[in-house]
Image 1 (spheres, rainbow, N blue to C red):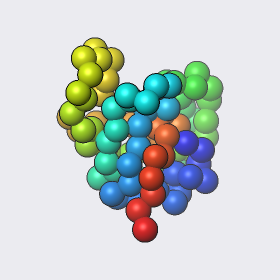
Image 2 (cartoon, rainbow, N blue to C red; image 1 turned 135 degrees about the horizontal axis):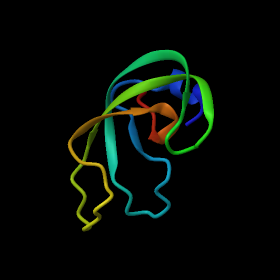
Image 3 (cartoon, rainbow, N blue to C red; image 1 turned 120 degrees about the vertical axis):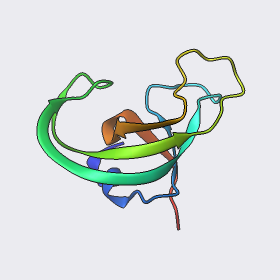
Image 4 (tube, rainbow, N blue to C red; image 1 turned 90 degrees about the vertical axis):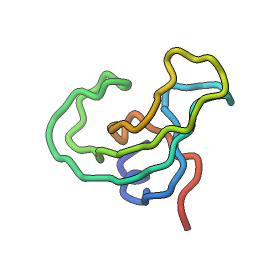
Length: 88
């Protein structure tokens, strides 16, 4: 997600990994977010970005046998995630 979307995201929002392209992608719920300002190369994009939000996500169990699917609770850069649904 871009930085504009990351600013709007709140705990309880649904997300998935940005590189997943199928409908069976593992989804997770946002638990927390924190702002980070530093030049860093983003893992999925392969580009240098000056700022990001570090988002803590609890991943739902994946019913498909996907060895690359995230599991448990993890911290991800906002650039590595895609919003499915915002909290209202």
